[in-house]
Image (cartoon, rainbow, N blue to C red):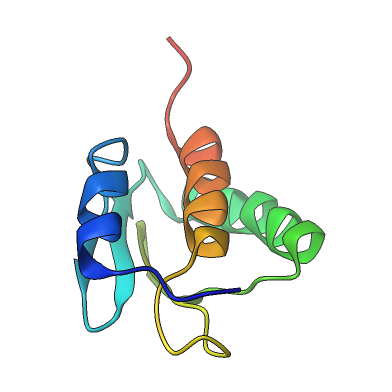
Length: 96
C-alpha cells in the first residue's frame, strides 16, 4: 500500500467532513449520547477493522471516541485508511 501525497489526502478529505489530516494520520472525534452507545460503536468498528485487517489508534473517554488512522507500514495515510474511515462513518453516523 502506497502512502498518499498531502494533496491527494486533502482532496479525499472533502468526502469526510468529520475527519482532519495532521501528524501523518486521519483524525476524528465522535461524541455519543452515553458510554454504552460509544462502546457499542467501538465494538462494531472492531469487526470492520478485523475484516479489513487494519487497526486504528483510538481512545475512549466516557461518551467520546477519538480515532487516528495511519498505515504504519507505509509511514502515513493510504487508501486503506480512507476505506476504514468510510466504514467508521457508516457506523457512527445516525441513519436519517
